[in-house]
Amino acid sequence: MPPAPTEPPFRAGCLIIRRVFSEPINPKVDGTFFVIRPFYTDFGHNIRMGKNVFVNHACTFMDRGGITLEDGVAIGPKVNLITTNHPPNPCPT
Image 1 (cartoon, rainbow, N blue to C red):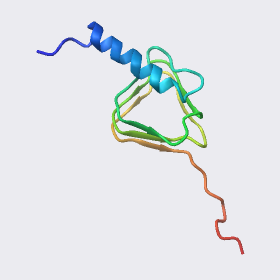
Image 2 (cartoon, helix red, strand yellow):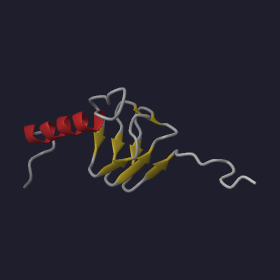
Image 3 (cartoon, one colour):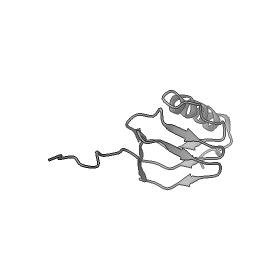
Image 4 (cartoon, rainbow, N blue to C red):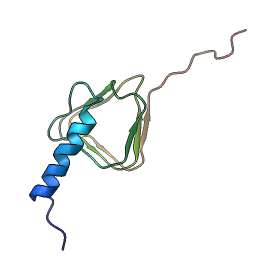
């Protein structure tokens, strides 16, 4: 039977994931944040995470327009949050 999720190897993995995830994110994520890899972002500096946020595997955050997840948000697997903007008229006359 695998070890319970509260045993030290699991906690150490959580700390590493939070540290790596916090590198492109400003401000840093809260200690209650949890993400399952893989996770993709095109920029990272426009993501804000509340407390007790869970992001499941294979999610993509395209955050050029900003993404804020408030406290207690849970994101399912393979979700795409896209806030990248387009010019209103890409082919001006």
